[in-house]
Image (cartoon, rainbow, N blue to C red; front, side):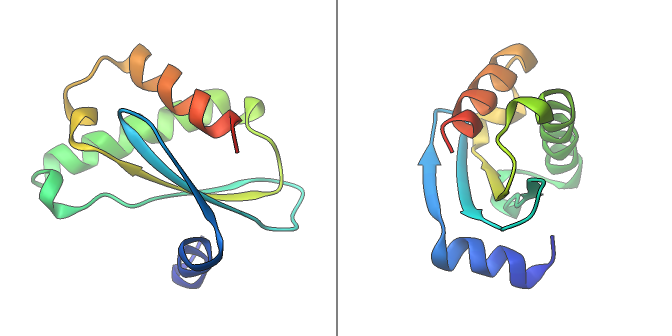
Length: 100
């Protein structure tokens, strides 16, 4: 996804929240879903933010088949993602993405 795609999701999409994530989504008229991540600098230094990004990417990679096709999805982690258990994060994010 590129900058314009992110802007379109924020402008015309919808939002779902959970204890660890805020997920923005919008239909994209494509046969696949596309994912983007936006991690604020306020959540920590580069090491912390990169760790969050790696964890989120791995969850999306493992559970991509469970997410409906045809959506642009932007994931915003909350500060709890940095120290939460991976299994709990995965369950939380998959639950939110399935509700899209």
